[in-house]
Image 1 (tube, rainbow, N blue to C red):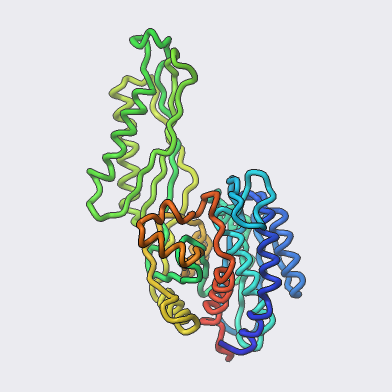
Image 2 (spheres, rainbow, N blue to C red):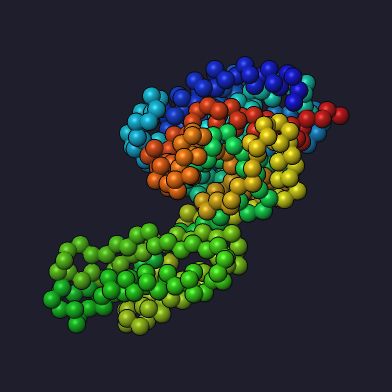
Length: 408
């Protein structure tokens, strides 16, 4: 890597640590990230960069530096409605809100990369688009920026870049071509029965019994309709019905979550889900058809194989032996790919470990990772600050320079 870039990276750690801790102390929920967006804008302004809002709290800065490729780097900025365990002395000061998914690492790393690239402009040529996206946890942040005209306001990127901190050895980088994060769908199902007194079940169409039958039948879609070895997850996360033991309610509600790597498999599962629900309602003699509402829908994150190999090669040159690995596909979902898909641009999304190495290795050896290693969306998920933040920042810079690093 160019010496000026190295110097810029080395000089930003003190500022970046303070910025990260302040951001961690003041998390904001999806589409409410006003203070976060303002702090990002202030940092960009301090670097002499203009920025523009999209989708309310999304911030974008286009950094032009001569002829060359266009690289878009994205970081999400929202937090979750989770009460933080007192793990760190810089824990959240917002009641019931914390950066339980590590997005504060993401945007702190991207800001650090911007700072390093701005201070070492002689080392690269082209256009770098720094995109700070709101509302990832609501599955609508990327779409909100696109609805607000993002695709018409910035140059089409030749490649888009993203990363996510996850449980794993702190500072370890996982790069994989093809699907790396699953497609996600949530379904709200309303079942319409007929209410009655609890002592008079013969007068009712009991939606509680109906819902129970449906839950059992839905579990058979993956086990009996999907070929063994094919990834498919169907989880019934909520069943709500009734208010009192002696009242048979008139409705019941199910909330179902689906995850897939293959859109054909997803379509089959959705078709089977609706078929089973409708058939069970008909068998129960429901007075009305069931209702289906699809929400929190995430696209498949499907890395371009050629670009993933390019990024992996750049990482292997820039980082220590063994630090770059091939990760397993992640079952979680993201809305990142909505942005490059809107441009018709290839993209690469990689994983960065954030767990203390000793803790993680011991948990793997003991088979207790699920119990001993806090994961994303849990109250104890506060990744190791060092070296995670430095590695994530360097990774953004290295990935960008894999395209921008050769001046014409």
